[in-house]
Length: 520
Image (cartoon, rainbow, N blue to C red; front, side):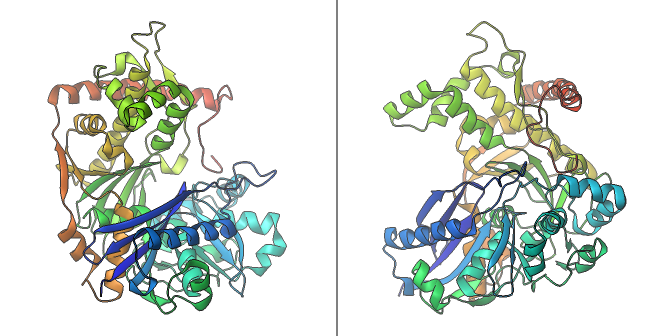
């Protein structure tokens, strides 16, 4: 009898169900886009709709089973991964009371209050958890207490969104380190919640569920969940993890010193560490990996994938139409245009994400600088290439910051996610960083990491690290051009000067930041 693993991936922009066989080969996938809720009258809010999104996930599970022609009884285990930082709060009956997605930034006043009343507290939290208030749970819990006190009084437990998926499946509220760590109420060394952080600012310190390592069975599919999603009652439910950390496992990035860039809606630059170091100026975030004993230093390039989607949809409808006529992806068509543009994008500077400054995280207004009224110079191809170069240059600066601080450097970068499909983008990244860039075959690395967790949970594999190393295969490799590397370093210096000026316009209230952390 064939056996399979099913992984639910609750991402920033969509929910999906992915099925793998026990050898790690993807069998089927079902996906639906979702949108997060902006609460009326609450600026910068991004709520997570647990009712509609659970219905969406159930549809994806049923469709993945159907499209893979797989019987529910043949699913050997189920796990989940999700966007990090998103939280769900429950009452004593496990009813969801409040949920927010990852970059919810409603708690601006709460962060300001914390910084003023507890000036050392953020630094203390960062030293223990590797997280700042930017995306942390404490300010959001305080916001709920202030604005919805009756709801807050009912709160009995809190979990992350990947944990919530498993709660819906198993009826068990539990957490694991890689995603719980992004709440900021966590200890990098012990890999456990730190309730005293909550108690210090007067919020409930009894709401934190048990923590189990990724790949641990916490329960089985309940009868209720079976009726809703179509999986068999009694199927083992296994702890998963945060999308970036499970994605790292799916790419074989599991050992100390391994380096990766995950190029999706955000770009994450990751370097694995064998001890939980924290940055002296809080410029970088530090997260627990799904591999015990490993933490990850992380830089983030904000909204790189989302900016590309905006450019395509807002400015390139003619190119999208032509791409569809030719039967190719619109991004591939735009990249073919960009490939005809020289290094430097004819001088165009893309001002979108800044490099990582986690302790004071905000961005300039989205813009292009140094445009020309000559359409041959400021073409769509040149603008598209400038966006690619911007993502690569910011990634390079984030990695250089990590390498300089940790005194560890890798000769190669594992590059995955939607951005890695573009051959030009891969080469630009190699040239900008001066590193060999390797692209793996796997396309659903995050879900594959969840499949590894399933296998560990039922004894199919020995450990996530062990199976991850044995499964990675390389599709393409890119080596840097030294001349281009020098040009990109010059461009980076000019870009940093330009970005400072653009940030000053935000500071003066002349332009509007693309995104800013609460309280900044």
